[in-house]
Length: 221
Image (cartoon, rainbow, N blue to C red; front, top):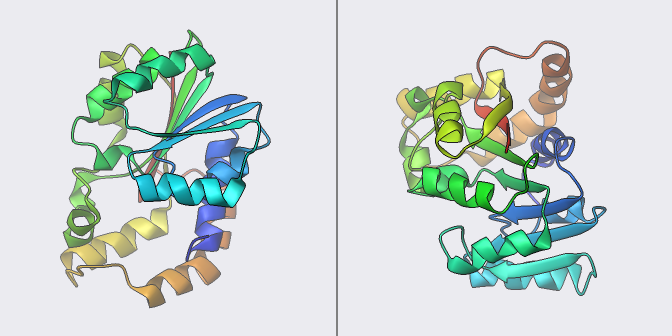
C-alpha cells in the first residue's frame, strides 16, 4: 500500500467525502486510492504509465464498475470520457507533476456535466519548494489564490479550499531550507505516521489550520 498508512488514510478520508458516484481518477498510480473508490457506481482509473495501470489491473481484476486507461489529460481520448457521464474527477498529488496544469484542469472540466466536481489534493506553498520537490518531479506548489485563478480560467467555481497538515508544513520547510534534504527520510515518515498523523487529523477536523503542507480544493463546474 504505502509507507505512511495513517497519513494516506487521512488524505483519503478528506477526498472520499467529496466524490460522487461516477468518478474519473486522474493519475491513479498502482491503485491505492482506486481500491477505496470501488464502492461507487463507476470508476475510470487512468495513468500515463503502462506499468502502473497493469499493476492496478492485477490488484483489482475484472471489476464490473472499474475501467482502466493508459492516458493523460492531454490525449484526445481523455475528452471521450465525457460519454461515461462522470460526476467527479479526483486528482490526488498529481497536478503538481503536470507542466500545463491549467490545461489539465480545463480538460477535467470538459468531461463533467454542469454541477460536477473536481477534487484536488496538492502540495501547498511555493516557499516550501526544495530539493525533495524537484527530485519528485514537482513543477510547483500551490496556494488557494493560485487554485482560484486556475479554476476561473477553466470555468469552475471554488466550492471548498483549505490547507491540511500544519505540522507537516514545518517539517517540510526544515527539510527543504535547513537540512536541504534530497529525499524524504524513512525515519521521519515512520515517526510522523505513527505518532503525529492520527492526532493531527483529529485536531484539524475541529480547528482547520490557516496553513498546511497540502491544499484540498473542491471545484464545481
